[in-house]
Structure formats: structure tokens, C-alpha cells
Length: 97
Image (cartoon, rainbow, N blue to C red; front, side, top):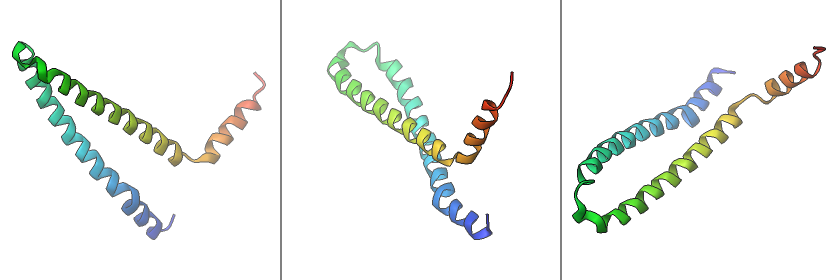
């Protein structure tokens, strides 16, 4: 791979993925903070009306995380060399044991 190709891949994928990773780390920290708050408010029975709103938002977060996991898996699959998988399958098929 030439130097310009490496630079293009870094600009097209490496840097944006780094930004996304940093944003996800911030989201994780925010969720940890909110989890600690939720533990404090769990004993307060006066907040029962808000629980359904919070539950709906948590469900939305859960669905978004599942979509992110799916996209990451697709990207990992796309980045795997296709010829290496075919070659390893071929070698396993030729074994006599």
C-alpha cells in the first residue's frame, strides 16, 4: 500500500473512528454518572411518574447500542481480507485427518 493510500485510509476511516470512540467513551461516563444518580433516586417513590419516561429513553438507548454493535460487526467483516478466509477454508478441506 502506498503512502498516499495509507493516508487516505487514515483520513477516511482512522480519524473518524477515533472521534467516534472518544464520543462513546464520553457517553459511557455520562451513563455511569446517571446510573449512580438512578441508584440514589430509586428509593424515592414520588418519582414514579418519571420512571416510565426514563424507561422509554433507556429502551431507545438499548436499541441504538444494538444498532451500533451491528454496524461494528459489519465493518469488521468488510475489513477482513476475503482471500485469507477462502484460503484457510481451502486448506482445511485438503486435510487427510
